[in-house]
Length: 231
Image (cartoon, rainbow, N blue to C red; front, side, top):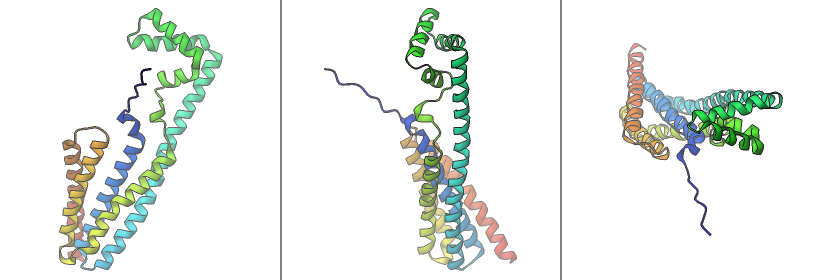
């Protein structure tokens, strides 16, 4: 008996991968930028660490809340569309059959065969067929608010902890430069890991995240230095 062939597609990771990469990058960039800005304005390690710890806690909570609200809105929209589809299937089954057949026909199936396929699909699971083929909602892209919130909070905290640890051990006089350099290397690693996990080429995503990280840290360092001189 021939073994069943099962393919593992990278698109199945899209839900948690998006939240994980966004959370880690945001945590590293925002916390590193804050630490660099405070370090440029102050010579006190205590002030830098207090600001960094506050950024980790507030940022993780903000990411969790933001992701939960955002993905919940998506989930609400999906549920509303599903409810509408159930009503249409109950009240207009013939029209829904025709609609499904047209979808298959538009994808390249011959008209008579498209209708036959639509009839068979609706006989087995009419609602599932319309959710998948009309609405485009597949199991691997269904909105999961709690998963997104927890993933974002955890990865933000993980990413934000890196510049905090560097600030803890770096000499105060060179803290801004050391944190910046270490975090740019960290961002490059995150960009490469995210691209690898998603099956994409690594060079462009890595350069993209390093560039914007450098812009963020450079901007806050300049502002911090100006404020430090003024105060």
